Amino acid sequence: MTEPGFSGRLIVVSNRLPVSLKKEPDGKWTSKMSSGGLVAALSGLKSNFIWVGWIGAEIEEDDREEVTRILRDNHNCIPVFLSEKVANDHYNGFSNGVLWPLFHYLPGDVDYDDDIWNSYVEANTIFSQVVADILEPDDLVWVHDYHMMLMPEILKQKCPDARIGFFLHIPFPSSEIFRVLPCRKEILMGMLNCCLIGFHTYDYARHFLKACTRIIGAETVPNGVYFKDKFVQVGVFPVGIDPDKFFETLQTPKVQSRIKELSKSFEGMKVVIGIDRLDYIKGLPQKLQAIEKLFQNYPEWKGKFVLIQVAVPSRQDVDEYQKLKKEVEELVGRINGLYGSLGYSPIHYLFQSVDSDELTALYNISDAALISSIRDGMNLVAQEYIVSQTDKKGVLILSEFTGASQSLSGAVMINPWNTEEVAESINTALTMSKEEREEKHQMLLNYVTKHTASHWGLGFVRELYKASHQAEKIFSI
Ligand code: GDG
Image (cartoon, rainbow, N blue to C red; front, side, top):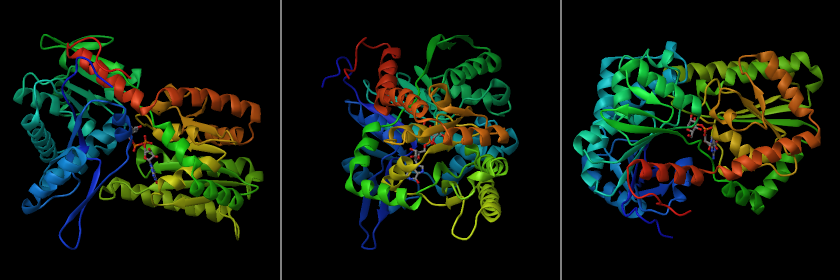
């Protein structure tokens, strides 16, 4: 398939490379590509792409040449090497200790100091240099997420003709929240050196435009910002998933037999599934409080209801995450203690990740999925649950604070802070008629199968190409 007009490469930049790398006891390196959402999105693109990112660990000086060769030859990836201090202060410090809580409306959790900010600048500078070293005139650069917000500006200083797009995977908060950030101007100016800036929802785009007006006095219109006598286009690109991957997984004999096994163990019960990284934005305490309320208001669910909650360990070296783990474990213990009995636990809590076969089987056998995020850029679990439904046509119970809620109108919407309402919604979902479930599911499925990951990736790159003033038609789907 040809892509008229676009003869260059796409350089994708994200904090982490989608590759896991291991040094075996015999000294040889092995590597494996992982299958994240971004990998799926980019698989729809027909152009050559190169991925630039950090490998997730400090690599000894002596090993760097070999690691670079393996990543380049086997995976089209270029590693960025960071010292342990810069990597830690950039990732755990500024990205996850400042930007993450603030952009999810938790300014009280922000832990700012100049030292971590300096490491953030340094990491963005090192990333920019790696890109500058490989950049060719026809290339497009697509920078991802909050770890890399200064990169467009730094790269542009090094390569003034660079054509850069930026996509934010998390919410862009209201300008009232954003203006708390000490380095708010630097972050906005960093982003504004792009041709195109993308967000998941209209609200996030609107918040960004408002921040540009209020904080740097830039002139804005609904689809962009005038900055340094250039027009920076701002657009909405809601990310999707790869539904075929789930449809195929569902058909495998292994998953079919696991579905039978799980259905048998939970026979006679309604199953609600929760799949979340153990992160305070996912609203796990709120979810558990609502389950407790459900048992208080509807004691008849005792023995007939189970929540399977997978809580994937995440950022365990950040204090807030350890506190959250303790809080969640106490709540699970309390609810199981109060409403369980010998042989029955209302909450099956797994502090671990599960493989994708198990994940798909769990989605499939569940009567409802409960997503209670207090803020969430999009939330892909919602979409994965929908495409994994077959006979049950399970109900999606979805927080109105997720980006996904803007497009998944067939879901039962909840405000996770309203415990009574969430408990009521769980009861409603589990007692809903088959006709209503089918109707809602069809509506949701239509949306998710149309707005896929590759639809998102193609849409963004196509707009980026256009925004960078090249030929009109670039990619054929
Ligand atoms: C950020 C934004 C935005 C989870 N547990 C297991 C597992 N997962 C997979 C899910 C899903 C992914 O991880 C989680 O995606 P989310 O979108 O729900 O959340 P974040 O990780 O916070 O992602 C978010 C996203 O970026 C994309 O822009 O939607 O708002 O916060 O794909 O399936 N996968 C397996 N085992 C697990 O235990 N195999």
